[in-house]
Amino acid sequence: MENRNLENFIKLSQNENPLGPSPKAMEAVLKHAHTIHRYPEPHPHSLEVKIADWLNIEPGNVFVSAGLVEALDIMIRNFVGQGNNMIIGDITFVAYRLLAEVFNVETRFSKLTDYQMDVHDILSRYDENTKLIIIANPNNPTGTTISENELIQLLEHVSSDTLVVVDEAYWEYVSQSGFPGSLSLQKRYQNLVIMRTFSKIYGLAGLRVGYTIASQSVVEKMEYYQAPFTVNCLGSIAAIHAIDDVEFVAKSSEMNKKERQFMFNELKQRGYNVVPSQSNFHFVLFDTVEDRDLFDTELCTHNVLARKTDLFGDSKAIRLSIGTPEDNLKLIESLGQIKIG
Image 1: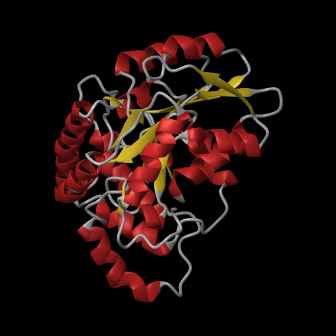
Image 2: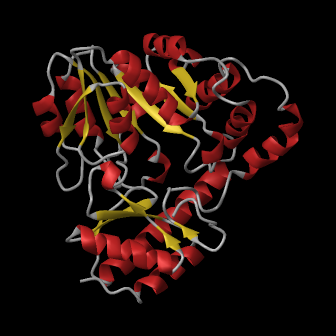
């Protein structure tokens, strides 16, 4: 379905910013398009310096990659050796699981509690051979978060040799209190690794730019294993200018917050089982695989694309991205014509 002409479809399947890219990023890309015959920096030092200045940290604590998947690839492939293991949620971002399978890494799956990562369950699976613990916060596809107190509890109970990776791809959408101040925590806990991206709220998914904040020793290792030229020149330029687009980020976050609540209320009123989200998508649960598949098929007949979550770890759920107000109204209209069960 993702390969068909999407022109007439409402695409709520990949958590993209429905407002499009940052205008400042777009302007910069158009301005510099004539430079694409030149190679980019082997490693995007200019963007690393910009991020460091923006976040008031040292450039040596910043690693820029071709999306977060490249950074995850480097860590899982090179930081977890034979006889070691990593821990992830049993329902979480599909790339963690797939990369672990590719590199034959022992993976322990922590059970979510109320569709939220459970620190106690993580620690019950942890041992001296655990090299990585990866937590998506907010979690994809459930949209749930762990608090700062929970993250501190985890950091206090694992060895400094274990890297606790917090994937904050959707952190700009969080509106609840208690969300971790991870930048401050990273200065206290050198084994805390923070991953963020320009793909989501900045609307640069097609340019593939992510960044990791970690201790200098971790960053140096990641740079050692990174091939040169993986971050393209327009992606780096777009990200540099997107950082300055504060108004666009605020507008995107505010619209998402309003539309997230609207969609949640409408789904609940129609009897759907929806997990409260702090991200730019909703996780909708069904009683059976058949009900879920019927729902997805019916949405497609109404030109709405959603995401089945089998690869994420749940075969009876759908993930619905938050669209524009117009898109969300069309979705709700479509729901009125769908009969499940």
